[in-house]
Image (cartoon, rainbow, N blue to C red; front, side):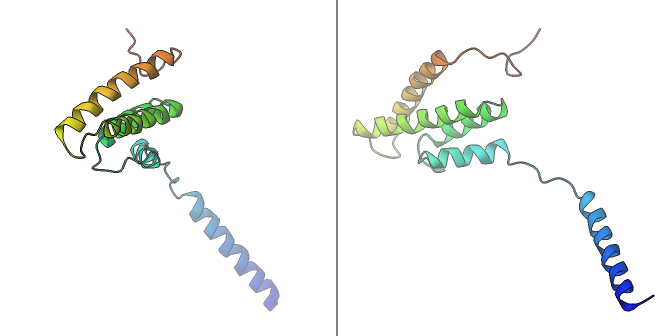
Length: 128
């Protein structure tokens, strides 16, 4: 066997070992619904600790788990819009009045989102 044949055999063997190793690696899991929801809420300007963030996170996470990414973005906009509206009323940050306002605004705005959605029957609907 010549040196070039030995090197070729070694290279091929190494490539096969690496290919076998890669083939048995577990797949990279997709981003979790909660981590994606956190990103969506941040994109809307709602960071952790801000009023409206918990609502945004819970509703967008649920929508993503149901396979409804469009709805997740709508709920993130609802939370951000509710916070902006309440701040425009002159309510102060980190007060119970602001939180109460955001709770009311998100409830009303969410009803409008649900009213504009076409009914979709899927895993989120309980079956008998």
